[in-house]
Image (tube, rainbow, N blue to C red; front, side):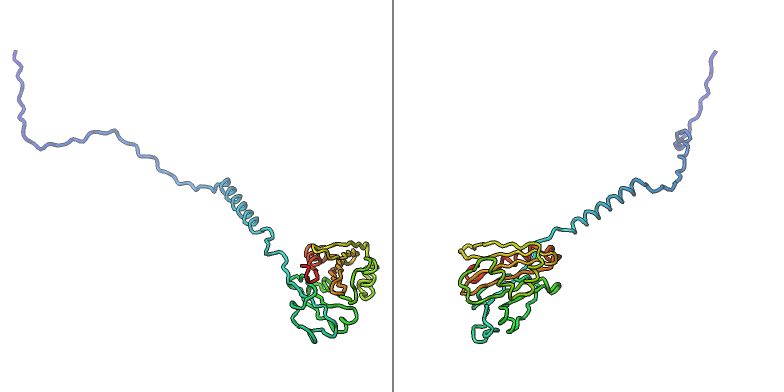
Amino acid sequence: MVTMFSTTNVTNTPNTTIPSLKPPQTPPPSRTHLPIPPSKPLLTTLTATLTATAAAAAILTVTPPSLADSPTYQIYYGTAASAANYGGYGGNSDKKASAEYVYDVPDGWKERLVSKVEKGTNGTDSEFYNPKKKTEKEYLTFLGGYRQLAPRDVILNNLALSDVNLQDLIASADSVTSEEKKDDKGQVYYVYEIDGVAAHSLISVTCANNKLYAHFVNAPTPEWNRDNDMLKHVHESFKTVGNY
């Protein structure tokens, strides 16, 4: 038995691309944007960082005192002129050229002009004071006719005779001490320290040019405690000419 196959006429038709079948894709779930609460740990860290930065800035701002904050001084040239020659009359008015002694004056202190009468009675030659507290001051007195220093107690008593404030300070003092010092050229200085409840005084006394020079540094106790280093510097700066 012969099986007959039918022949199919193939006609030239345009090629048709049959798309490949893909499995159906499920769309991705939609994203829901939820509000994000602020992160407390982050805020805490940020706050701590800012606080630390501010603290560091404060530490940098509070710097230790610089040398520019230290007291500065001017040199005073004293002539120890007699009352007749006060102000340069009858002599050389150039204080530096005719100076017999020098001492340092803190910047900002004011000079008190000494009258001729005062110069002639108690020998005050110069005086400077702190304008913020006028009883914080330094001044110098001199007496003629001294070739050498007498004993220390005698000198202090003689100074007190012409200085009522010194008498009162000694009378109310808790302690009065004295010592003898020599500078690098061998000149002798008596140093007195009077410590009272209300005030403090340092006195330096020496002889030169046939005169006795006494340099005083006085201050009320609060100012003495506050300006101790400065006042000691002023006290130690006193020298007669030729010894500085």
